[in-house]
Image 1 (tube, rainbow, N blue to C red):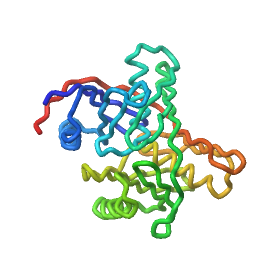
Image 2 (spheres, rainbow, N blue to C red; image 1 turned 45 degrees about the vertical axis):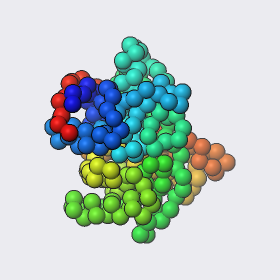
Image 3 (cartoon, one colour; image 1 turned 60 degrees about the vertical axis):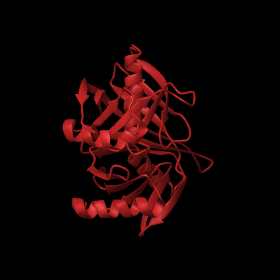
Image 4 (cartoon, helix red, strand yellow; image 1 turned 90 degrees about the vertical axis):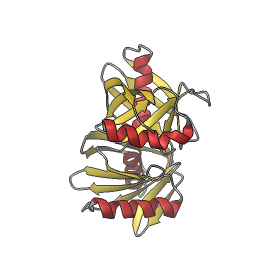
Length: 257
């Protein structure tokens, strides 16, 4: 199978965007083959919009991914020839509503309005946030080794029936976040360079006690993400994440399925 692929770099979280059609049953295997051959931490498939958006993004495991949404919106603006700011309505797997991405093709940045969490929960004594398609737990360092992290993330996903699960290891004193993300359908685990939905979850969980608007610049291995939780009358109204986006290359890949 020959695929047209855009390699995007949203805050170091390398994302492969497949721009041509791939039958849904083949997407998990295609994603694994692409990552094995070409690197990257995740794969998204761009398909025709279905809900009034400008672009539709289907992630490799049907999960929601904020960084991939930022990358897709940025790519759509660039592909349309936009010079400067553009607001792109992105349909994303795992999200019931359109995600607005504000891309600046001159500055190389994109901000996304994130879906609001379904609920805040406790998971094994740790605060967690359940979003459509993914659940994130806010954890304290140290970060476990890969085998233990996979075991924990699998259990987190299973406990909430989620397609993906994130373990967000936050050093509050240093403001440093190590995201560890597991995707059930591809059985893949990554110590990610950055995680947008995880950053949004962290902002939500940190702001929840005071129920007042607050923002955090969360430094991560691949770059920083600015995550903001906005409250009004002590009710969460908006979650946004933003940071850099670069298009590294556009290439044609041949994979065996």
